[in-house]
Amino acid sequence: MKIKKTASLEALKPKVGSLDFWSEVKVVTTQKEVAAATKPKEEKQSLVPFPTSPKVYHFHPIAFVEQMRMMSGPTSPPWMELALAEAKALME
Image (cartoon, rainbow, N blue to C red):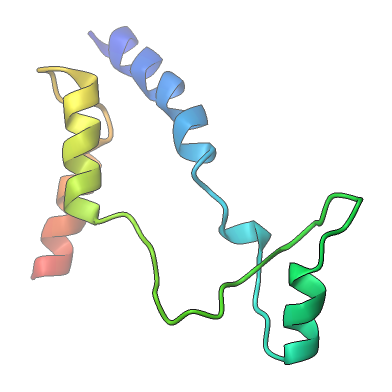
């Protein structure tokens, strides 16, 4: 059982890692930077400009946990106990 949980956790790490894009975000503060960031470039840009819109997109934490629960099947995934303990600590 523990081997299966470890294998599930190892399979989940690349999926979660592919969702990490914040290290590539650059905050644009001036019009000059906005123009430079939106101008097409031939070479790959190392930093993605942060949107100027006030809307923020994020994963809803409860919906994210529920989605992970549906993907892992009827058994509890190895990270669920930790996530629930952290959520409970935040509620206190």
